[in-house]
Image (cartoon, rainbow, N blue to C red; front, side):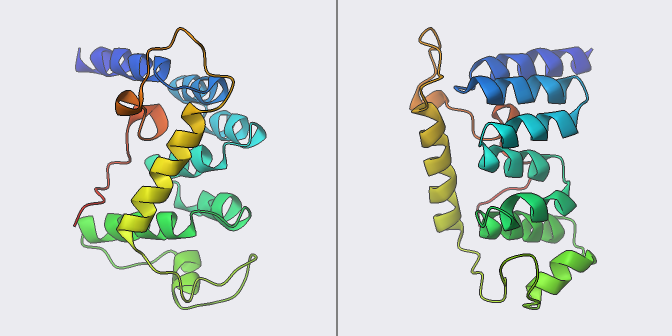
Length: 164
């Protein structure tokens, strides 16, 4: 029965997301349609949410389309990837990450000098969620405040911890 409790909690978290398109994307994800969820987010201009969705799903290959194409949150993705690899005691095997880690120039920008500074990353993440809370499509009846704002897709941060 814990599976059903997880679904209920997921739905409750969705209700607290301040942006309708983000809520719709989370419902698509709940229904097992991650590609639709990503498409909804990108069409709505919620690039950051799309990036966080793929981090949450450990869909690392989609980072190129989202963060590289939009030239945003490259350090966020690289940081979460590094935390993931460290958490499981693995060395990098993904060719795309290896290329960019070594400074290979392709797909719009070079990652040779990308610094993984968690303080800056966390500040950028909070700024993105603050922008969402200020979007005009937020329903008036939602009781979400800054302290209750979702911290990632489905209201959760990715499982990889960002603290030192």
